Length: 411
Image 1: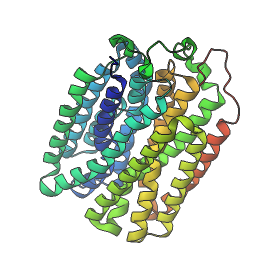
Image 2: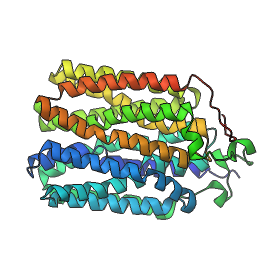
Image 3: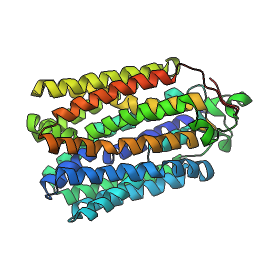
Image 4: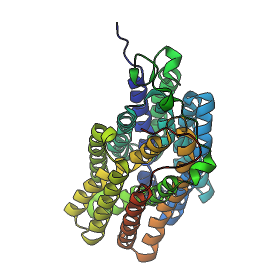
């Protein structure tokens, strides 16, 4: 009798993990900016800097997270991550001084690192070879679900209760969802339960599954790695900056309720974009797809800057949303495809560290430009230019074949 492949349960667990992480992390940032500036009197620049600190902390931990998962498995990392994230969220309503903000957001950053794309990719890498693209993009649907439900629930909770009660409830739900997944569902390798990657009846080809891991110095020297870091560093800096300020951008035009709808609509669009990617992920040129996504995002940002009407802002939020999920999903897919499963945790951990150090500047960039010019328009136009540059770099990086002294996995 054929045994059901356990890897797809791991994908489902990672999807739920991503739902929680992105609800309280990436998509929660805009709500925190709004609540802390309007309810607790902090300036946008101060809160934006605190948001930036969360991404800096997360970035600095990425390599360590990848290595820890490689040594100890993902369970400990996931469990510690959700506890740190919950603590950071619960602390926010109690912040009265700027240093309180930095401490709370730093703790949130610890949780974001431990419940990140790196963790999800490292958890899935041993389970899939032929279907690694579909598995990763399916798991990352949870990030879009987080955007669809996270912002409306947090905003709705603050309208019904207080910021403090809403934060406590959100933290409790996160713990109740993620801790059982870490303890009962997530497993390290298919071989531990008598299975093989992709549910195959026999071990996969030795060359594919047992490629010698890349040394980080050798990976760093490749054109592929450097172009990945520059392109996705720019693209994610723009994306995180925009998402962190999406609610404040939308409220003057759409009102609080309309802003929540715009964020949710963007998240639904991101879900649709990820569904399309999941369908075709194993058959496309991922670098060219990444360039197309970045150019579409640039066009949406230009439209928001030039046409700040309610209907235009809503429509362009949806267009931008189509790109959100695919930028974050294509980044690990490129590393996985070009450097292999054996090296994924360490190589993507380094890439994610550098990407996040760049993208951590996004919230402060948007906030600083908003304070300097009195509106978000100049920041949106500047960031559209950065996206165009990122698209050019990602295509340039794939023009030559990957070469190095170490053996490598090639699909």
